[in-house]
Image (cartoon, rainbow, N blue to C red; front, side, top):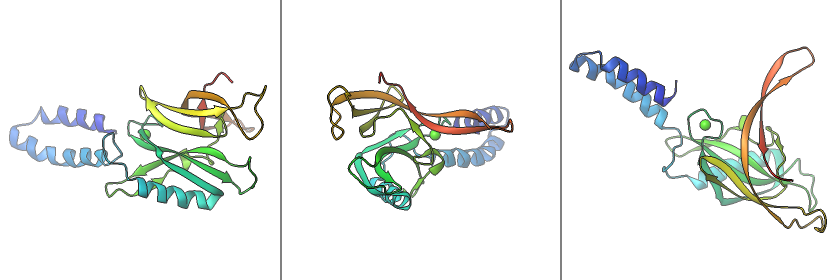
Amino acid sequence: MNAEQTAQLARRILTSLPPLAATLVAIPFLCLMLAHSQAVHAGAPIPIPQIKSALKRYAGTIGCQFQFDDRNVVVHDIDNDGKKDVVVLFFLDAGCQGGSTSGTSAFAVLDVDVRGRAFIRPELSQPAVPAFGFPRLIKRIFVRDNQLWYTAKDFDWSKDPLCCPSKPVEAPAYLRMSTLQVANGQNFAVWHWATITDR
Ligand SMILES: [Ca+2]
């Protein structure tokens, strides 16, 4: 039950009770609604050092060359469950392959608790969750019209050398769930990051 459903249920019950009973009944609902409000929400301070620390620990277990720009942190309900999430962009050479063309920009999703502690949600984050169609290097993420967007440079294959993409890209980024059918006929729901560009 999300915060809005909790509020609706509370209103239905409270309007059917006498005042004293309504006050007593309201207390657990208030506690429940406060618990919902402990999720990350727009306007709340974003604990950048804690987010960076959690991200660095996570990245250190899966790759090398971790990089993170403090500006690439947004608050957005990326999985459409009605609760705001912290979405970040970072850079990582997953698997430590080395070389100047190894590593990619990657998305991660975090929760932040009431004490400002940040926790990675690996089930929604790269590299466990694959991403399709994005440029290798993304510069910035932001929210516009309740949608996650990014800016990047992509290759103009007619002239760009391998080091240096030059074509500006601005496009939406989505976290989507698809159904994967496996050999025995069973279906699995799997998350993936997706984008729409004119590439
Ligand atoms: Ca969410």
